[in-house]
Image 1 (cartoon, helix red, strand yellow):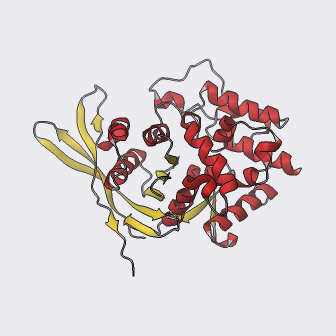
Image 2 (cartoon, rainbow, N blue to C red):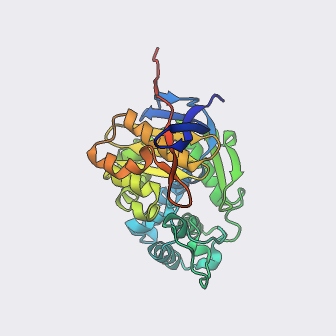
Image 3 (tube, rainbow, N blue to C red):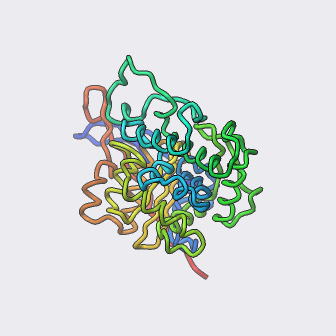
Length: 343
């Protein structure tokens, strides 16, 4: 594992300059739709847990088996299957609608409960008098899709997060097939929402997103990638939420980029027009470093037009401010992508 310095945070005064305080190591892989490595920084084969960047591929079995049609899921509801949502009212209502269509309710969700991410993102304290349910968990859309697969196939809805459950065995098999790996080769761990999660080399994660971005044009999985790409790019506000990075990225891409962040600083992007897949991992899990690294990658690949630069400027080299709002430093990229050599 050979990570390199990707991003630094600094501290100082604007009139006398800044000194590096922290350095965030990481790796980047950029591949084409055939999986050929085009550009990299650090270790393109860095093995990392995909976390929530896996969500579109966890929805694959349900979509491929005709589940969306069977339960008449709308495009917005398909988007929620892939979401790390902020628990805004619109998110909760869509998840509730999915559960209603499959004859279940929030009591069947096994993702746990959390305060909605919305409040952190907009710098507001959560209301002291509110009670939260599993519907507000950022993974409740994915879990409603899990339950929908169980209903579709007559599988038990209890303990559906167990890695030995038929649902999870099917997800593992479909992911392995898509990634071109033996199922037993996938390193497995427990995600924050209690579902199994898998580690992949960055280049493989990037390849999956290059294919996802091609949607229905993917030769093997287009029947599922088409609806997933269309839903995610049409409703990035449902996939993420107000002031969230995936919303900003897909807004900047104007329907051409499909993007999904994962916990502990994983970012995956598929670019339809360029036929590219991008995967980025910050080794220490620092998300503020991830956003600046992501901007740097997109910039170096020549993917940022005037519109995209304006939307994503907040990530280019953001200031660090203290409690009084005084600028104390910044977050800055340190790396250049290296073009792969072909034999």
